[in-house]
Length: 76
Image (cartoon, rainbow, N blue to C red; front, side, top):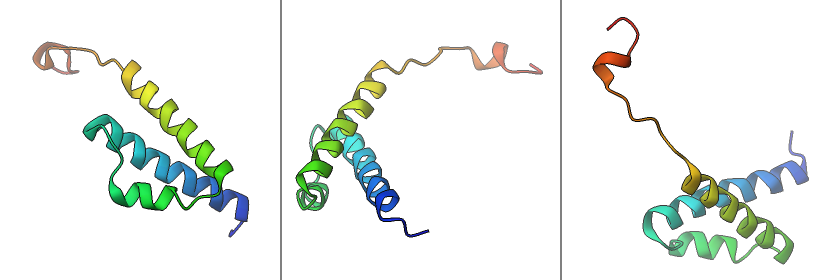
């Protein structure tokens, strides 16, 4: 609906997710990500870094179940 605040928050969320993936997978931001987020206003950049840290913490605390696919799938 072109609401400025929603658009701003969506942009921050989008780049936070991209940044978190890059940090988890490669250990650093890509040049493109850094160029983009370094142009944000300081308050938005601070929200970006906070959200990146939250997403990284979530990924580090993520656990998955180890299962035997032949014995634990329904109908097997």
